[in-house]
Image (tube, rainbow, N blue to C red):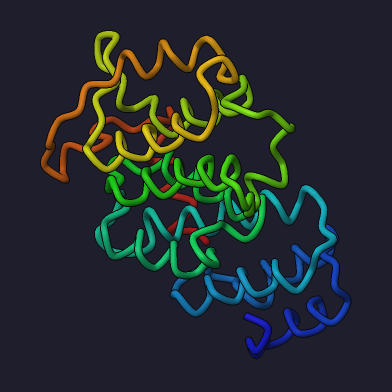
Length: 236
């Protein structure tokens, strides 16, 4: 997004190459006083994140919260991530299938936790970041933040469970064929002895079924107060 044209005050912030707390206040007050309302607004935040490698916790919170609100509640269909939203997200934050930055990866994970439905294409894509990290040509934000290990580690398991915990039903891990395929590809990338013992337990619990799209992630993963979020959205 190097060619993105910023308006004030984003253009000034991008020129500095870093985002501090006062910059976030400026964005809230002048650039997006009504919150993120369009895909162009969202692209501006992605471009600003790319232009500013230095940032503080205020930017992290603002980036994740405002974009999650837009993606889940500010665009139709409301409350869910459908195939269209998922495709837009994947196009926006990836190069050759790898997610650009750790912050964008966290945004994706948080959005999946808040949404009541997520398509299998998106969950499989997020799982595939582990495959890219373990492959012969490791790349992507997940690889950059992952402690070195030949096979699946406790760190990887925590990430995978974060993606798939909504699929756990009575001790079974109920996955779509696409999700199960990604896990099998990950499994092949290292010797069984290199994987964490709990990985084998996870794989043994996998049950593959064809599910209607509306059944994927039928329960919201993150306990939230919808009224509070919607009130914030209206007030933004």
